[in-house]
Length: 447
Ligand code: GLU
Image (cartoon, rainbow, N blue to C red; front, side, top):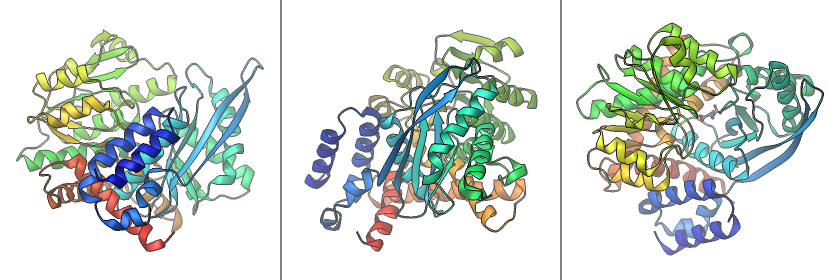
């Protein structure tokens, strides 16, 4: 790391001492891009500071009334991180753990993820410390409306385009969009993505996050002269990302044998591979109970309370739950189980030390979420394109475009690592490729 980058890093720690997730993702990124960031131009333009800090950030109160008539007040945020290559774009997360550090970390990851897609979208993130667990549909709708009354003035098709994330699925996007339309008086469909198919959504958008991750893994396997056929995948989470992974994996001949929740994990030796099981995952998500044991009760599979799926042997480990879910002990288990591929679905799913261990293990090939987790936002950009021309592509067309985008991300990541003499290091490669795309766009546009 050169002196300038070290200085930027030190300044950041001083400015944001209480934002651990944000500092964690930036510090990992700076380490990865160091070989590609020696150019004097970056220091002259103070480009690195401008790339790791958000352009702006909003926070607002969200008052709402529950079904008993009691008023609650939550905290909402939107960080508009970087607009170098397009309008701000990124998800909204409703989860009690949401705070300024988490939204900044999500906005940072999103910025570089979006750049990798090769599509014209900048980076953003947002959400609220609202806990949807145990809330009725009416309560969630009222919350979404109150959230949008605060957010609407900051978003729009050419400014900032939110979508879903943890706690915000197509149901919530529907209520957010309905409120946006009422308050602005405009049916501006590409002001939000992840919409339902009846009002401007894209086919495959719900599946895209998981499909993209499996497409990325398929390219890694191909590099080793292998295919997905017969592979056993160890997956965490049971939300949108895991659901998409199960479906595309089954289609391509692999089997997802675990899912997890805050309550433990389930093992399904037959694979999460039938329509009934996929539908049940969606039901579990919308029940708002946030427990995976219901799957074991429904399908008679094993359930391991309080434990994580990484103790199960398999060909690939795919964390799809949330940030820092995977610890050093988990990484040690994955390595001991001879897992060959570690592919991130969730944003920053491993702690700094866990990721170090996995990357250092000569037996494991690793892929970072900015690359392998970018399928969702890639199809969001396709949704914006379809809205702009008042058109909609077929399932097959969108799926094929997604496959090609993921493949191009894989190629760009592998090529960038190769160009800097880093060998087959897809994580450093994806960070470098994204860094180069954004820095070039920023330099071209001046201060
Ligand atoms: N949180 C999502 C993601 O990266 C959604 C982003 C979007 O579609 O704007 O993956």
